[in-house]
Image 1 (cartoon, rainbow, N blue to C red):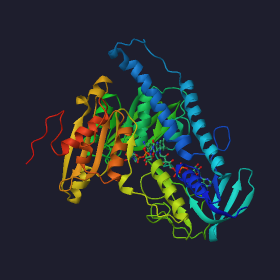
Image 2: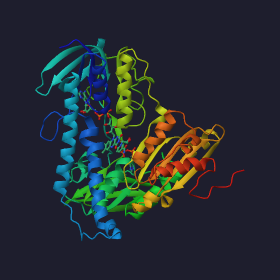
Image 3: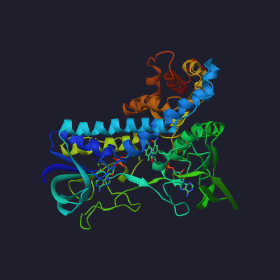
Image 4: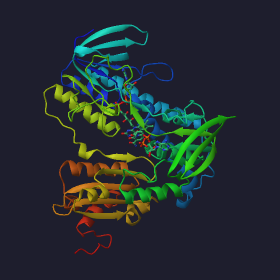
Amino acid sequence: MGPFDVVVIGAGPAGYAAAIRCAQLGLSTACIDSALDDEGNPTLGGTCLNWGCIPSKALLDASHHFAQARDGFSQMGIEVGSPTIDVAQMMRRKEEVVDKLTGGVAALFKGNGVTSLAGFGKLLSGGRVEFTDHAGETTLIEAANVVLAPGSVPIEIPPAPTDGESIVDSTGALAFDSVPQRLGVIGAGVIGLELGSVWSRLGSEVVVLEALDTFLPMADRRIARDAERAFRSQGLDIRLGTRVVSAAVEDGVVRVGYQEGEEDKSLEVDRLIVAVGRRPYTEGLLAEDSGVNLDERGFLYVNDLCATDVPHVYAVGDVVRGPMLAHKGTEEGVMVAERIADQKSLVNYECVPSVIYTHPEVAWVGKTEEELKADGDEYTVGTFSFAANGRALAANDTVGLVKVIADAETDRIRGVHIVGPSASELIAQAVVAMEFGACAEDIGLTMFAHPTLSEAMHEAALGVNGHAIHMINRKRK
Ligand code: FAD
Ligand code: NAD
């Protein structure tokens, strides 16, 4: 088959973006993906669209509405009685959203002229790709360039092997057929908090077992502290510094053994989610003589431009170093496509936003205060609480704050950290500002519509230089 200018292996957000951009740039492009949906039909969009970002957000939004109807409406004078949840309907709607978006990728492939191949891709030497379709038939494809985007899979831990029923990974936790009365979660990371929140809002008693002593260590300390307080007050029983040693299923009950300090403890739950991270997925991807190397943690080794050690072979997305985030992979896919077309594109790894879609949401970009301190960099901080923001009060959604950190000398923004309503949307303003090298003063000089949550960002930026209007500014030296 072929020859093609570019063959992409993997049609997740990294691979499909690479394929579409290559085709837009006039390169003949094929994209191979092996994923099948629950009915056994090929599906595009990878983890993100099928088992990740999108289905989890569909359940997060549905469960948030449910919790609002149960706990929030009456404060606004809306009486709806005691709402009930139809889990099957919630799941059907989630599937509809997924189908719309995966079908959208197929339409984009068609519209842009990407040849979509359903099956497994393997990189051979000399830039050739072996394609095996779902019937087991193998074809050799000649490619001038290859982009590897096979993504990642959940990490399994020996004390708690998943059985797809009582002990599940994130994919299983997105498809429960009922609300478990008692739910255990191993890992207080992004998935543990998001999926723990979904089922907690729907009525599960949720216990989260986290190995580390620190909650959300990658986040700014102040933001992590406020987020932890908010999640605990919602009923998430987060147990830090705990080490799971066993998990056994008996009569549909999961007995989890764990250690807290020196003490042996146990927990009984109806279902257990294992959410301890993901690992790069490279099984069967590389022929022995492909020439592509892995790093010591099993990621495909690439340079800053996502080039592997083999000329004309690139790798993007979760399978390479850096945060495992859909948007990071998409930007890498686009960069590689443009580089193949001789353009000078780059990814700015300093400006990758992180979001946790709990309620309140948590979002940040750039450096935390602790990182700057460790680097010995001088900085100034401005914060503004949503409790003093008119729109947040009007919406009865006042937990959290915006924190802007700027260089003490140049005023250039080094990081923005938010816990609060719509943090996922608000953080985009900070990303744009940082991409353009903005100072805190630049945001301060910008006019923001009133009343909006965005005004909290405005005030926090003004606060950096002691100019906030709607709070008392800290005295400066
Ligand atoms: P993937 O999306 O994993 O796609 C890789 C594709 O390649 C898959 O379809 C796979 O079947 C296919 N493949 C693998 N090997 C081969 C082969 N040899 N031949 C053919 N096909 C192959 N990220 C965010 O940014 N925001 C979120 O809100 C978010 N939520 C998430 C929620 C959950 C529950 C999970 C699990 C993840 C979430 N993520 C989120 C992470 C996000 O899904 C990943 O970062 C993203 O999907 C990675 O994209 P990718 O293209 O590198 O790989
Ligand atoms: P994670 O790395 O975010 O969190 C895993 C947590 O499990 C960590 O806190 C870790 O200390 C803990 N842990 C590890 N081993 C443990 C053990 N044996 N016992 C108890 N705790 C243990 O990983 P995740 O939540 O599984 O998510 C995987 C990836 O998917 C992440 O890299 C994330 O970027 C991505 N993701 C992103 C989003 C988002 O952007 N909103 C949502 C979901 C997933």
